[in-house]
Image 1: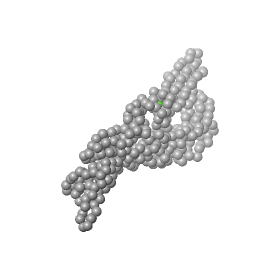
Image 2: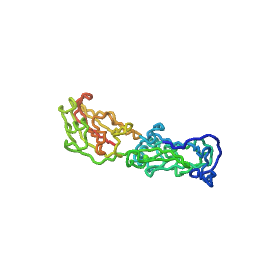
Image 3: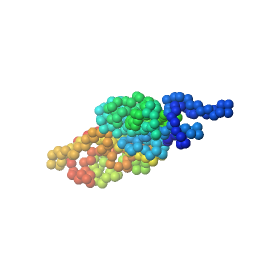
Image 4: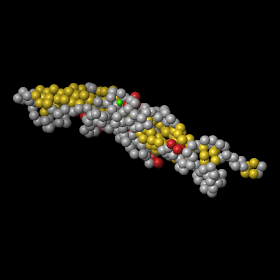
Length: 343
Ligand SMILES: [Ca+2]
């Protein structure tokens, strides 16, 4: 939201002033008094000043567009806290000096005052404690520690890195100000933390309310299980399967009410398998390798996902298995070796 004072355009003159024009009546004579400061206001007529307007803009993370003016404070911009490892270098990205292919930072643009009649006018940026700003989207150009610029230096683009999940939706506010005009944008950092895994039985946690995932747990059960032709969901399915249920805490609260926030629980997987045909020869099945980014490659659907938070909890289940015979793999093998890793 932009805040600026109204314009009165009878005549103009430039005066420094702070923080407002004083207009006392002294012995019946109107005295015009201006207090000098850093600011130059432009036009005075009926003792009112035109202040330049000032504009701070923000975009959602993952390469979003700059938000419309009326949406900068609500719903504001969203991104994930930079606690992932997008460049797969083994270092959490918020601790990296450079993240090749980084997509989690939010673009922040601070525009010059309009009209920009005083190049020496100071423009100040405030940054919430839960955020840092960088000079480039991949962090390579370094951390921005400067907070005051001259109007002549604007416009400037910087990139917001959220350090953790926000304490509430829209809790983190950036402000751009110059004299007594200002503009704000609000942002939300999101993060999900793995709380626990369930690896046996068929009981359903109290906060899990997704019907298809509940049904899968009750039908397939969790833990190691061998199936012959009586697999509940697959005809002529023969193999071994391990059921795992993951419970995540996702913050901040209230994300389920944000129309533009979609939660998608998915995985990265690498697998290798080979099986022994009836004639005794081993055949290597197509392998799956980890992607070279944090984009998932094991996200076939949402039937095993509970993505709407309840009491901050979301869930996903996975039943990786060694499938020896199925509708899509009709060859009857006699032996199989399969390995997989999931992230
Ligand atoms: Ca990294």
